[in-house]
Image (tube, rainbow, N blue to C red; front, side, top):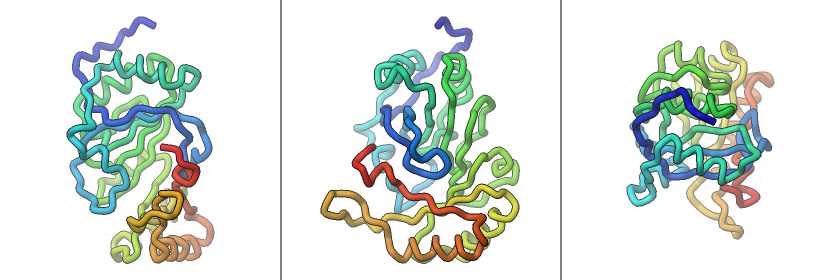
Length: 219
């Protein structure tokens, strides 16, 4: 398809692959995944270290990204933009417009920092790590909080408040940094208990998100 969108720059990409979404609303859905390199945050428990590896990053044009997406799985039209942090990538709006023009259903997972959410996205998963403007929450289709063994009082209060005001809230327990016999990251049991506490307190408004793709060895 000839593009009417001018996308002159290249983009820092550390991963591009087809897999199964393992988390939150779209768990179980086959998707393409485009992972950007780099993030303005430095969460010590981040479970996607490749975005911080300078040896993993490739600079790809929009047309090169499209070619690799089609090669990865030509039958899939659902595409998740993730990271790192997509909002921190210059020219994100142009890339979104280009990919929409090519027929992709576009989802994005973001912490809400680094830039402005562009138009044209079909689904936005907001995973807050810092205080954010209300306008960012208003754009999100779902909220996903990564919960540790000792969450802050601010995060705990926000989770419950957002469950009442937003309605689509997930809590996801942090991994504990150890691997089981199958080489998979194990969930921190105290983090899981914190998640279950929030679910109980919300009277069913909050749901549990687990990284099920990792259980079956998928990226």
